[in-house]
Length: 455
Image 1 (cartoon, rainbow, N blue to C red):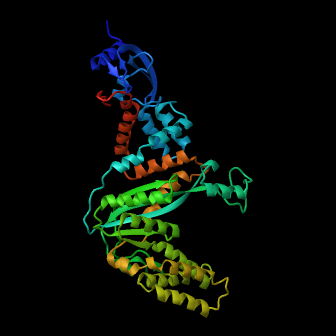
Image 2: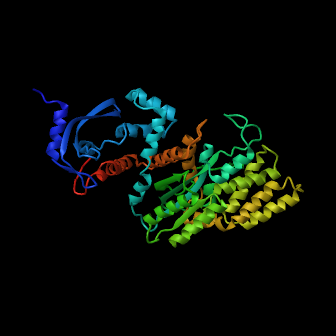
């Protein structure tokens, strides 16, 4: 007579061990077959049958569960991974639809949210365990950071934002803001990038130049390219503070260059708090950093000055901006500041008309210590924060700012962490690490030391 599944499972467990000892030292000597559990998988619902090792007054042990590394809940690890892949690239509703299309009716929206949160629990430990590859001393070590707001539910806002929203009062509409109403709905996510780059010496005219017609251009023949990012590593968090995220970035940089033999370049947008955090981390790591304010942000302020001297839509404004930027990139910042104020006086501008020029002048004056673009270009450093700004769009805006989204803190943090893992190209090694951690948490901790259970 052909053996039943219960009998086969029972024989396998008996061969593996006659006695199992749990973490409390209790010996489980009674073996009982025929135990079942339901499992939702990528091929649909399945029933898992296995033997139980029993002892009076204690929970049963299931060695077969440990050897197969079955999850604690009813959703298989394969289904959990599918939920992660679908949920981090689109809405949770879209994720449920995609899963049901190929796996059947095995999961609901709220379950997908919980599966994603659980799947992200080991991201920080995973990156703490990874050792970056070394680079030569000549390779630049670049750190960059930025922030992006995420629309949150009221209970997930930071205390200051929640108080400000309460002062503003409730909004008139559920799906949009009324005229003149401030949102008070966003919590800032901090994004940081660390990457390597070989120095690429450039001139100001390699960054921006004037064509024969007087039009400013950013591309053209014979122009030297800037440094190329390699070994890019991203981190982001909406739950943790900017200080903690920037500290993580500096820790990653220190792991790449523990002896501080490389040149550390920090690219920022000029935010005062951000600069203070960078200086604080540099002191903590006892490393000299070279801070460069993003040249694109400088260009934005120069454009503000341009509209004080030109009418809206005037094509001459572009040439004027290019001339000022070329002067700044060439190291003539003080001359540019004097020229801006001189032109404002010569044009006889009113206080209202001078606002653009005054705003630009104040910004350039406040950041003058980090605007040595001539030195940066001659040394081959990057001068723009495009890497981290692109990461803000890709990691945060493309998923967390989709229409109608209002996030709880746990869900937003989990999705953001997993998007970082995927963007870093680490999904497969992370998932292997996560399954190992799950095996330890769910199974190994239930058995006394010495019982080797392999997944």
